[in-house]
Image 1: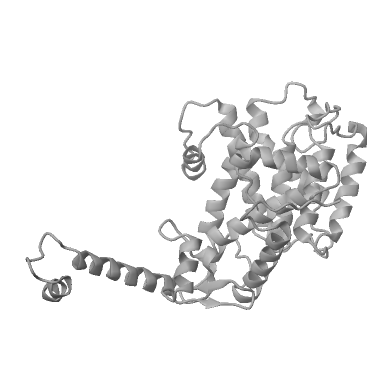
Image 2: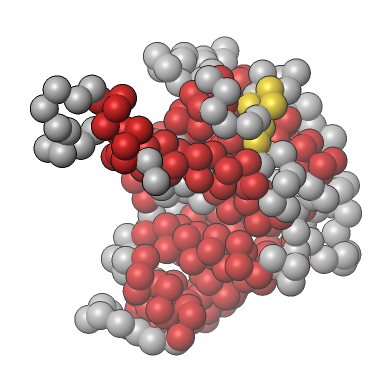
Length: 361
């Protein structure tokens, strides 16, 4: 049974899925689809920093975002952290960059075979190789290096789920990869990817780094079906783990909703603003910034102060040019308000209107 309780004021899971489906269709049909890292280096780099920071922080890494950015942009290890932590971020970032580069390039993959066993192992090797060189898993045998399957059994997880015996891992992973053939044709692609992510975490094919490798592979699948990657933020760690537990019991809905919201966030924060020209109409969520929230822009559109169009889907759309026009008009109104209210200058017996008229050059 699928539970989809809606928190007051929070869209339902199905409405989130619908919004994502419409947004991806708009990206594909009106904005030319997801840009490659070569075409839009800035947006991919921003996502790269965010993902490397938050995905490693989910596993206990203590580097802050600024330290991650300096490490990746300039190669500088700022702060007094253990070498292991810098290598965790470096390895994850290398793997993420490979994922972004490979995901949109033609290769051996097809919609019916979106991931190969070699790619899965390569992602793990890239992510874990640097940290393994300075701090290998204490129980690892020589044959359990990064990119190789575990040869140990795993203790039950806190939620009670027990990964399969290590002898079953190769066959389970092979079956899992075959199951991905139906993702692109699924009625609900996001929830299908969520189920696949949960299943890989349940198999736990590697001795260490399964969470990091699993999120990287999840993003590889997302980008190959035309979605931006998802970032699971550190603040959502508890909810993410609970959603994985629900997926273990055959209920991928909470995890699917979480991934859908993360994809939408990246789409509107990074992707759409970068690919839309100044006069192209895009959803207000892609135009919001520190000065104007989505609700502020929506209110301005509804009052006719912001030039915008409301589509058949009920969503307001505007453009960068119209936002700048609104910003300038609001600045003018603010200046006028400053002129309109100078009580300390108003002569006795003079009306406010007369004072304003005399103040206008």
